[in-house]
Length: 216
Length: 216
Image (cartoon, rainbow over all chains, first blue to last red):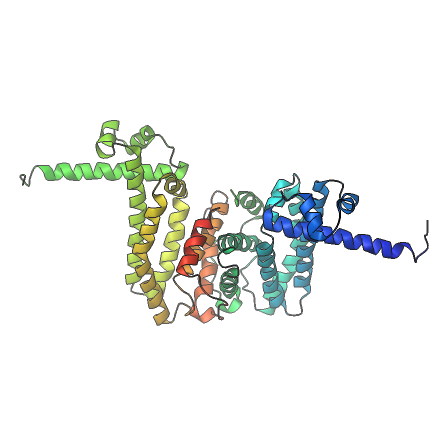
């Protein structure tokens, strides 16, 4: 089934570029206004026609899924970079900053995720994929002596929830304020600042239940 | 219109005790189940009769207001103690712990506050009363050299919002987990740990707007 190499390749890369433009446009508009943006607006914003949209995404659900995959892929890539960072502390701190930053830029995606039936299962699958990367990131920074030794991978999501709240409250009022809160958190995470944390981190089961509750 | 001093005093202190029992009972049940607890349940829990309730609180609104005043008075007293604490850092850190602890114990009161028409105005008036006390608390700890010098009174509410989120997510799952999050925050607040915070604290106007948004 080999085809001549010259002809189809540019077409395929054209098609790929159009698909990417549609996903980027949808992601931008969903992030700004939630999942109810009309597809007409999305294609227009991408500078493409409805035919192109339907060729790539016969239903809006498929477009939504592509947007979620796109955001998830970005997060997974960030976790991979964090685990492999030359300076383990920069990898660790940089990942938290990246998550806060993505959250600030994609606030509408939370509703997109909630609007999709299997949204939470997909998010769960993503968490399972990045978990080993985050463990590596944390262990490396702790071995380096920069991250406090009593911090665990199960404490990390709690920081993200707290950050979500700060980002949500200040997003329209002072869009960069969260960086100040983040810097405070990071100072508390440094090994040199550490006084022993009381109590226990959450277990996996507690974390799962707390995660389901957090937006209630 | 003076009355003999001997007779009415024990009666008044009895009445005061009954009133306090009713308010404590209402506060406990509202905290647990929100503002819709029937007044019959509240008097029963207080071990008192409906007549006593109506004598003190002719309407449920008056009882709700008394509960809010009670919680506000506790917070105001805590702010006063913080500002006068012998060890300024203990005063500062102790106040944050007290607020988190009150929030964990009184989660239902948030709905009580929201259910009362002037709830937010009352909360606003409370904030105005405790603000100078918190400024004093912060300045004393900064002069002591224990609290980071770039922390401001306008950063404090943001910590409370972030804590609310953590408490809400973990309350039924791991009711003491918030102490771990608090310890992390406090380590980030110590002067010795401080790397300069980026950006600016919120202005008063930004803080007000962010505060209105935070539960949305």
